[in-house]
Image (cartoon, rainbow, N blue to C red; front, top):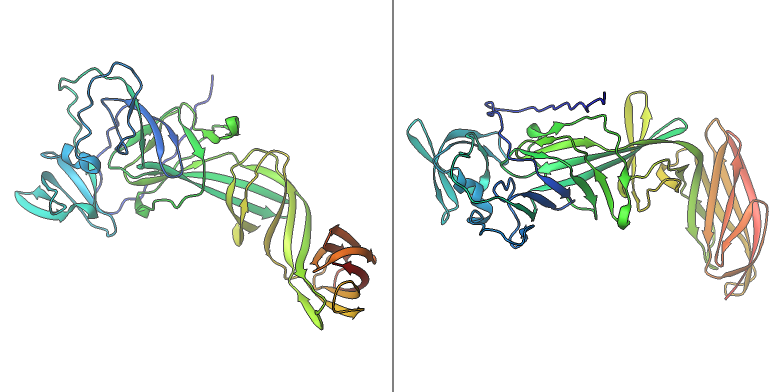
Length: 410
C-alpha cells in the first residue's frame, strides 16, 4: 500500500483564536515568483483575478457577474457577516459584524456589541468567519483561468559545507496574500526570474513537511517543480515553507584564489587578496538563483558569501567562492622591466605564505595590459592572450617564492 505524505503544520498566532477556515474547491495553479496562473471553477474564485486576465475555458459560457468591486470584492461579499480583521503592522485585531464599506474614505464600519467602530480599510486584513451560503441559485459553472498577484512563491536556496561534503538545500516559500484559506492541488512551481517577496506577519507563518520525492524539471526550457496530487492548504495572509529536492556532493577541491591586473608602471609590493574557492559537481537538477553559503560546525551554521548560480544541472561543475581566506597571504613584485612601454620583457616574483597547519592549494591569476608572447617559470601557465595563472600547493606553515618572466607586445 502506497504511503501517503505526512504534513506537519506549525502556526503561532497572537491574540484571540481564529475560527476554523472553510475552503472553496481546490485550485490548480502555475505558481510564479510574482503572480500565478490559476485554473478554477467559475463559481468559486478563491483569489482575486488581475483585471483583464480571466479566460473562460469553454466557448459557450454565461456572463460572469461576481467580479465587481475589484480588489475589495472580498470585503463587499462579507457585508452583514461576522468577520475578524487583523492590523497589517501591529498586534491588533477586532471581531464583529461588517456593517458597511465607505469607498470614498477607504474605511469600513465594524459592529461589536451594538457599538459601531470605523476603521481604515487599507490597514487591515479581512478574515471571514462565516461560511458562504452555497444554497443560493447559481448559473452553470465551468472552468476558467486567470492571473492573480495573491499567490506567489520565493526560492530559499542554500549551500551548506561540512568537512568534504556540500548539501544543496532548496525550499519554496509560498505566499497567500488573500483573506481566503486556499487548497492547492495538481499544481506547479514556476521559476522565471528573481523577485522581491511580499512579507507577512511572522506569527502567521507555517511549515509544511512531506516525504514526496519530486524532481526539478527543465522541460520545454522552463524550470518548474510539481507539487503533486496531494492537497496543500495555505491559511490567509500567511507563508508556507515547502521542501524541494536537496542533494549531496563531495567536495573535489578547495583552492585559495587571487586575481589582479598589472601594467608596465607597476612597482613595489602588490598585496594579494585570497578567497576560499570550493569545487564540486552537482548530482541533481536544481533551481538557478541566489544561494546563501554556510559552513556547518556541529549544529551551527556560519554564514558565508551569497552567490548567483545561473546553471544548476546534473553533472555541472561549480566553483564557489565562500569567504575570504584566513590561511593564505601573499604579494607580487615587479623585479625588472625592459621598458615602460610595449613591447616589454618583465621579471615578476610572487611570494605565498601558508599560515595553517595543513597543505593548501593556491591559484593566482594575473591579467596584463599587453599580449603575452612568452611565459617562463615553474608552476606558471598562460590562460589566454593577456592573462596567466600561477598555481600549486604550499606546505603547512611555510613561505614559497616563485620567479617568472613575461614577454609582452601590443
